[in-house]
Image (cartoon, rainbow, N blue to C red; front, top):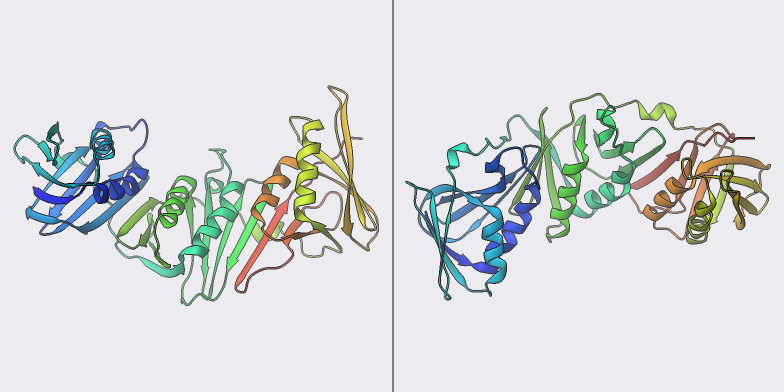
Length: 373
């Protein structure tokens, strides 16, 4: 295989694909990129068996071929070279690789491409095109609410539910739940898949480094394929049944409290310091136009109290929540004000942005902490 390309362009492509190379892979070959040259198109693949990234682009090729190239040494070499045309030659017999630049020659040993794991194929897929921004927003809104409990496999990812003209993204860890809906989608599908956390993080990074406005998402029963520009990212799906989330979302919430988001968040950040380190519990006593928030850690006799103004007309209610979870949720909402909807001290509370863009809807749910008297 022989081709020429600028060193910085090659490095850029490798950095995208390198997102799929794990730090301690189960097989040595997973520390490599797979290079495949066909005429003037070079395809670079990298995988950790869960997520695969493939990037194809034009080079000046003069001899087709395939080889597995050690990622670390190649990327370090390219980073240390200024932006210059380079030439890469490989030997199909002994997998030797030679990189020629204006400064000199660098030789490294590659691996047998036939030992590289098989890349999942896009067979029997169905899918949709979504705005790249909407996907990034959906990931940012939901990823933090996924569970890290390996026993709850389904909750280790985000549910993506296609429902004709809308896509619903849901994440929960049984304490908190986020449901983010993107409308205005043209599709005749109604299907659900669960995308693992690792795949979503890589999706997000790839979209952020691209300037494509649209991203194509397709899937079959094993993998999800995300195509953005010249890059294809494949993630294995979580094969589990997602819990029925609509059942836990309370509908008759007669108490609606409107608060300034950053005042509320800053107050909780201060009070959580004084809360019990296991539960992070803070207690809200909500009355007309104010919320009294208290925290205490009986083990150390620490306590704190603050008042936050709000607009609220209903009858007084006292309820306890995990302050850490609330701070996280408030960090995802980007409106100046937030709305809290409650019904009873032992029922889940809802947190909503005070306004939403057209075609989008964000709902966050938090289970109360049962208060100790």
